[in-house]
Amino acid sequence: MGRRGSLRPMAGVLAAMAVSLTGTRVSAIALPWFVLTTTGSAAQTGLVAFAEMAPYVMVKALLGPLVDRVGPRRISWVTDVVSAAAAGAVVLLHALDLLPLGALIALVAVVGAARGPGDLAKEVMVPEAAERGRVPLERATGLMGVTERLAQTVGPAAGGAVVALLGPLASLVISAACFALGSVVVAWALPRGMGHRAPAQGEEEGYWRRFGQGFAFLRGEPLLLAMAVMVGVTNLLDAAFGQVLAPVWAKESGHGPAVVGMNSSVMGLTAVGGSLVAAAVAHRMRRRPVFFIAFLLAGPPRFLILAADVPVWAMVAVFAVSGFGGGFLNPILGAISYERVPRHLLGRVNALGNSLAWAGIPLGGLLAGVAVAAAGLAPVLLACGAAYGLTTSLTGLRPEWREMDRLRGRGTPAVPAPGGRAGTAGSR
Image (cartoon, rainbow, N blue to C red; front, side, top):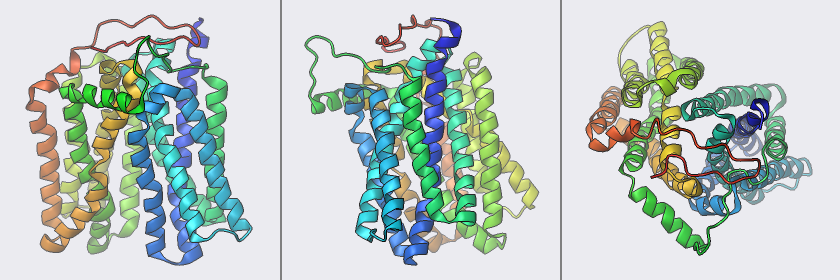
């Protein structure tokens, strides 16, 4: 396999991830505005948002064994097609005046249920794509981080602009087109059977058996469990920040949502820069100090700066530094996961680990709202910043974090032939 040909799967995975994630981010802007403008009800808008996110999390957690069994390439293609069809059906039925709220909720739930395993399947294909391109894992996961950050930055901006200019229905058309393009990229750029391993002789094929294997493996990996739990706590705090604390600060400070949006945009752009740097040099750096320093930059300063009375330029500078630090996190987390989890278990183990890491997100806004009502904004910001700092520093003293660098340097497995089955590099 030539050097040029070997890079095609990596480029294909990243391109499929980029267009699908952009479609997801566009729909996250378009759907709420579509519901709000067509119904005028904030309650129904919240109901539709819940109908998309709840299936996303639950189905992603449960379908990990199916991703391993059927193969991530096939799952990715099917879920992109289903997402495109469901989003397109919303547009078509609305144009025909045949879209009651119940039908909209059902179609949105289908989109959410498809996006969960679809996103997981693309993540699972990254290590094999890296092997085929002879790309270090940190560089591959760094490029994946760049792709995710760009989608998080460009998707909402594009969705908001299209909604403002053409209305929410046009944004849903773009979202459906992105999902459809993702399926085309997967079918054209990725070899058949990529990421799929045929079952070994005598291997149990039952769903619950596979699910149990993933659970047992994750339970027996202290480092992966520690990562999931720590990220679960920081995700809860991040959700509290984004859903309640930042909007309340915008209202009480008088700066308004424009400054919050500017902070988020600057943080997103510098996070792209951090991910690019991580893709270039992270494989030469010691993971443990980089990881915990990056977490300290990415988390506590955002909470503490809002609790202080500082000029807007200073606030934007803090968010810029936080974004840059955050760009290093996912490349390191992804590389460790890909090294430690056997290839045939990636789907089910990553699905469970991701679900554990996301478990606190629905509670973040609820807890923050109760806390602000009881104690006021500034004390809650200070408490959350302190909790973030303690979580990401004291956790690092535990012995399992010393394992972060120990699997490096074992060499890269041979690159499989097209359609071949990858090995289990980095598995223990």
